[in-house]
Length: 264
Image (cartoon, rainbow, N blue to C red; front, side, top):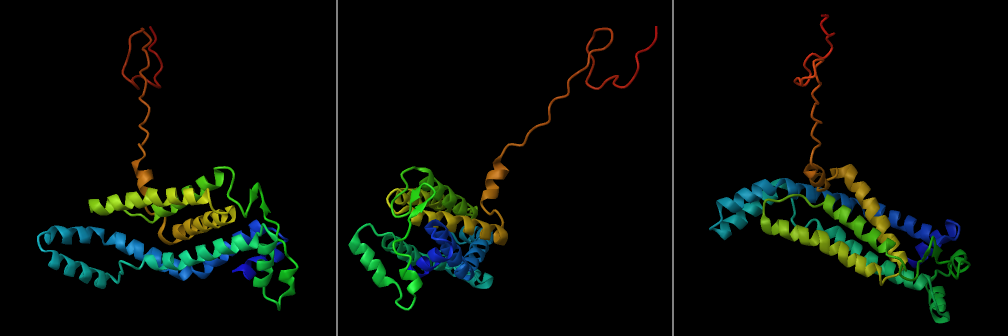
């Protein structure tokens, strides 16, 4: 990952921020088959919620039968309840690796600069010519946290939108409560992480979330975000005003419109 990032840095004109953005897009394209499987599993689980609620109601007093019918429904629909965790488990070490990569790619001491040189492939002299890397991007120092709250809030907002799109309504109150807790807890945790981690890692999170939102829109649509639009109150038509009659008295709305007054 260190060598790939330094190579992208050299190819895009010594801009580490652009290199991280391209690196993020490449990672999302490589893991796209897993993301596609995750989105399809989530949509299939959402479609099964009415049938699952019916099973829970029918076998409320028989946990064993309820479990058997639930697993039978999963097998018939070809759904794996744990199928959504695979892409997350695979991306987690990528986050850890990128965090370590950014720490090493933007050295702050001579010892760390020497450690970065040792990690570069010796058969690629182009990489060694890029040392040290320019860590400036916009207002950011990509090796240190963002001094403003803009990037942390952007990380939280993009993560909330992505999670909301993948969160579907469920008739189970406990599942609904858990979904709401995760919907707010995860973005809040990543906001706190962004205040302490290098801003280059936060930039990776923002770009990864935005790419994920675009992918999910073209695969499953807006998903859970449609609930917010359905809850918006519809505008009622403006009341029609009454027009006064020529004699000064009021008339009903629309009465006598388009007719000329009678001649005396």
